[in-house]
Image 1 (spheres, rainbow, N blue to C red):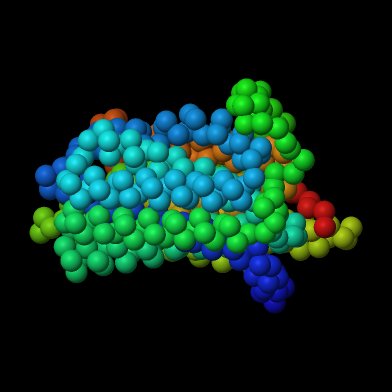
Image 2: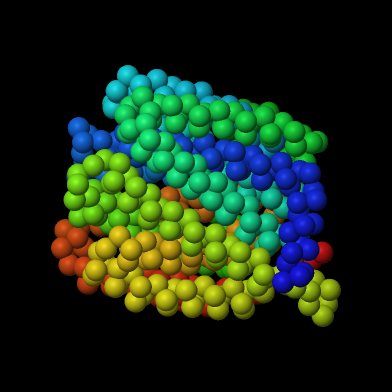
Length: 438
């Protein structure tokens, strides 16, 4: 435990590491406010009620296009200054969020809003992939595990806190379009601050990529070839590939749980029929998931990374595998019981457990990619990873929404989720221990 605390202190002693984390926290806080406002505006507004199928279609429209384009965009994370990507992508998000704010203020729910939200989400995923690819440039390789446990989790926690504050504001001011537009406006300010913080990371190329040059036009022409190289690199790295597959399977189960909780919060749990009650119930499930991820991250900090007899830093993947497999097994009865009972408390516990497991899988995948994939291909591999996570989430949501049997027979839903976690456990079991040279 003492060694883990020392690693945390060493990470925060690095100025660029603090700034990179600040970029993540500020940007994801803005994202939390945006998601809260849009959830209220689109999914819980009485005059805009959607069926399960409509919700699945909405998720598909928002996530699938970027999932297709994302890997190609990820090529540029390996070709352009990542510091400049973080700056201009956050500025773009700020402009888009201001535009969304105006549309919401004018009560518009149309193709324009969908296009703005789609573009904003795409920019955000581009930023997240860039942040992940940049971590090895601001912390020592021996501290990668700790950084991968802390940085994404603190970002997710900040988004959850911002969403909670947004829900509180909706309770106080009412869930009106004006209140939602104000939340989005504050979120845009957070995003602008994230862009400013990116400019404080010095020198400009400290985040990489290293050893690349050329004109933008040349980068566009070679993007398909570069993507092929990224896929080939991933195919040749069994550990990275298996870790990505395991995390994606968890996201599929998370997708089923998400729409299940969303439907319950709008129907079974909302006996009073109040929009704010529905939002609070769904927010409790989301908060439980965030708490589960946070707990797993804190455990990871104290479980992983120690020197071996050769002087290397060894990711203690035996411990990580054990924790991941154990939590996968624990998910099976917990989720089954939650789906049978269908109460708010039981679903919150299930969300916490699934997210707890998912955080272990995500930390393992991030660290394995950073440890085994060269910096020249790391950005596109993270984008491919992001594509698979988005695709698995949409697939889980769509499966529950479009297959009536999953909604009608709770045992079938439980069995489907159980199979995914059995698959996760098997893939984790096949991952080999990786060494990170100091």
